Image (tube, rainbow, N blue to C red):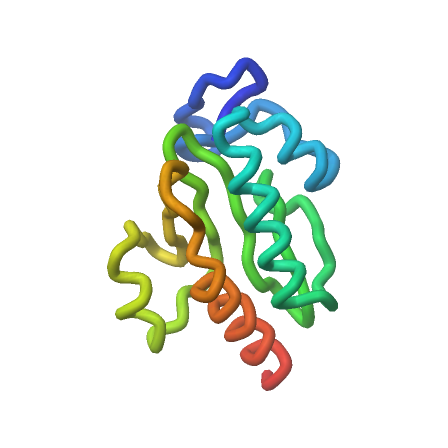
Length: 132
């Protein structure tokens, strides 16, 4: 993530921790580096369309969505945006073009967001939370 002069931070809460927590998702997006704002707004739209019943909060210093438990969160970085939350194993093949980590996937800023894939990830979380 970034501090409010646009530089990448490291250390403290982990690589990319922000200096100050945004009070809401609008503030988070508005304070993001300009190159990432459009992707963040698009991620937000995709998530809200896939889970309109979800509550939008700031958690772990980033936008997060809850519905009967945690769904997903997202954050901006220097050259990508990340979607956080357990990644459904059945989507492994679709996730293979992207860099993934433990419970995260990175989408490069210079490429279109895979809205269908993101929708499937969010809906899988909704289904998991509703079933148990």
